[in-house]
Image 1 (cartoon, protein in one colour):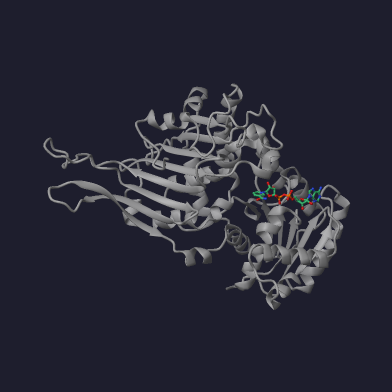
Image 2 (image 1 turned 90 degrees about the vertical axis):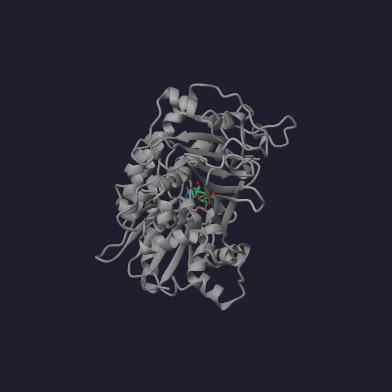
Amino acid sequence: ATERKAVFLFFGGTGDLAYRKLYPSLFNLYRKGNLRSHFAVIGTSRAKMDDDKFRAAIKKSLADSGNRTDSKEASDFVSHFYYQDHDVTDTAHYAVLKELMDKLDKKYKAEGHRIFYLSMAPQFFGTIAQDLKTQGLLSEGKDVFNRLVIEKPFGRDYDSAKLLNDALSKSFDEDQIFRIDHYLGKEMIQNIEALRFGNTLVESLWNNRYIDNIQVTLSEKLGVEERASYYDNSGALRDMVQNHIMQIVSLLAMEQPVAFTDTDIRAEKVKALRSLRVYNVADAATNFVRGQYGSINEQADYRHEDNVPHDSTTETFVAGKLLFDNYRWSGTPFYIRTGKMLADKFTRVDVVFKRPLVDIFAFPQSQNTPLAANVLTIFVEPHAGFSLQLNAKTNDTGFSTEPIKLDYLVDAQKSKDTPEPYERLLHDVLKGDGTNFSSWPEVSYAWKFVDQIRRVWDLQEPQFPNYTPHSMGPAAAEELIQRDHREWVYRL
Ligand code: NAD
């Protein structure tokens, strides 16, 4: 592995995300040699603590994620960690962070490379970015890099996202900003590009002549858990559709990039999003449905979760139909759905091909059932893999056909060795590769699409709750697709 050099500064450095995901991911990069001796990590938050206490917390975070921490390797790793308490709203105090960063940069010979990771409430993103620049924390020099990593959510509608982006771009250029969408760090999401552009068999059929519809499902089994106060302000449309689903859909819909580089890929994703039809009021109302889970016994009832108002109208489920107005996709809808408290936890993409134009096996005297559609399924999680459903002959006398499946499932050992999304994404940040991050144009088109749905929903009080826990959502999600004489490939 190539060693990368940098001083990291984690805002929200004592937060849940930092301990649960970010530090263990850095440790994996360290064990693989992507980080060796020329790096340091500063954690900052309002809490007071010294370096020793912080290092002990880092060890615990490594242990909690399944690492052995009695090794020399673990001790060497945590010796690169430093803590500095700081209130992000106190501009004068950034001087303390600057001094520490400069000192560690020299000590570890990090060559001026800096990564600022904002893992805290988004209302602070703008202020922090501004103070980092005005208080001189960005290093200068020809070959140095300063990169800003931003956690989600990126705004709550187009207008707020634009304000945030304007604030960030006063201090950082677009190619220095890495907006995290951890779905883009998932193996099988990245595999969409390999599957499409690495296979004639796939890409030559990847259009409205051969594909009837595409279905994207992000299904969660749990309810809101501890995130209720955040979630109730956001809802499934903002929390899942605007970012993860729009990113997945644009990878599925885009044209072949000129080359496999962040600039080329982004250009194609943006082009795809530009041809996504933004609905008028009537179409938004028919093409999107929302749901909220609830039950008579209040056992699993969104409105009875802690920190959720009893009359909350926040949606915990969304299903919708997306249409691209371009040559490749005109007439082939993309159906999407996501929700909490559904039947199972999984993410998958089902690509449903058109049936043969003529079914020669279905002549009048034959007993044959009509040919099934070919379906290519991309299993994203929990098990990664593909499955291709084809029609074949049954092995009895006479002649009938049946659907069979060609499966490729990533084996247990290989999936254990697959890097976690945050490990990949942090590695990409160190390399300066923006492929798996959301660019501002992508974010803005996604918001403009989603805002239109939200606008329509806000006009009308929903009839909630409308789906039972552990189902696949409200009846309206079935009607949405049945109206088009289709059905969800994954069903209960
Ligand atoms: P958290 O509440 O656990 O941590 C917030 C951190 O910010 C703490 O370290 C706190 O001390 C610090 N902080 C708060 N106010 C401060 C101030 N004025 N000055 C300095 N420090 C301050 O949050 P989290 O769950 O770790 O999430 C962090 C970010 O990541 C958020 O943007 C969140 O939306 C995003 N995110 C989290 C998860 C997750 O699984 N936890 C998943 C996706 C996105």
